[in-house]
Every structure is written in C-alpha cells, then in structure tokens.
Image (cartoon, rainbow, N blue to C red; front, side, top):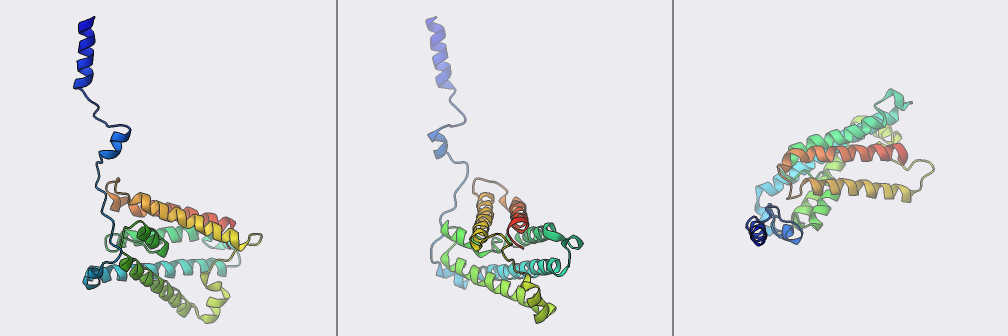
Length: 229
C-alpha cells in the first residue's frame, strides 16, 4: 500500500497542470498588450500617415452622413412609411455604411468614424491626444460637408422642410429620455469597438466591421422604433 501511495504522489508531481488556473493564469499571457500611447507625440505631425489617417476619417464621415441623411429624408418625405424603406431601412443604411467604411479605413486610421469612439480610445490610451484631436476635427468637418452636400442637392427649402434628416424626440417622451437612450446606444457602440479590438483576440481586422455592424443596426432600430421620429 505504501508503494502505491508513493507512485500516486510521484505521478501527481511529475505531470503538472498544462493549463494554469486561478491567479497563475493571470500572469501567463498568450498575447502581448500594446504599450499605452503617449499623451503628446509631436513626431506624428511630420508623418504622412498621420495626415492620411485624418483624410480617411474625413472621407468616411462625409460618406456616412451623406447616405444616412438622404435615407432619413427619403423616409420623412413619404406620406406613409410603408411606401419607403422605413425604420428598418434606416437602421440597415446606418449599419451597412459603417460596415463598409470601417472595412475600408480600419487599416489606415482605425476606422473610428465617430468622435465618441475616438474619445473612448483616447481615455484608454490607445492613441495620442494629438491624433485624437485631429481625428475629431476631421470627423466633424466631414459630417458638416456631408450634410452640406445633401442640402445643396435638395435645396434649402426642401432640406429645412424635411428637418435636415435630424431626429426629434417622439411624443410622450422627454428630452432626458432621448439623451439617456443616446448614451446607452453610444455605450454599446464603443463597448463593441473595445471588445472587437481587444489584444486577446486574433485576426481582429477581419471581424471588426461585422462586430460594429449589428450593434449599430439594433441601436438605430430600437431608438427609431421607440423614442425618436
């Protein structure tokens, strides 16, 4: 009996756990976490890739606003939503454009296309303050130009009559309800971006556009169906 017990002890000590568990699993990382980005990086200002990324954000935001605003105005212009793409069409227009634009710009600028995403990545030290401010400026300029082109095509009177494609809080809800819904929707979007670009995941560039597509579609559809009109 003593010999068998000794064999059991030797066997238990000889073949250790291949998969660390508990606190030991937290120290053995099979991935490499990128270092935090510096707050200020003046060297970026002399790099062409820095300005190329800003141009990519401008073009992406321009196209996104151009398509999404025209889609919303087309639905509003119709006397009945049944004769148009409706709320589902608006949601898929938003999500489809984000899918295509993130796919095109992810390798150039990261495919933010939203100041909220850029600000969240700045807080997480994923990019420098210099790049974040530049991205936000280019995104806002792209949005203004996209809406401006729509206004030019539609005409000032038509553009104003259709509300410029902007949403308003539906009857029975307060502005606070609308603000809360926008906060939740933006949180879902930013959370999805962080999860999809986590260093623990592999082949991130391929599935990021798909991951961003569906939360945005669901958020726009839910808000349009319940709170906004």
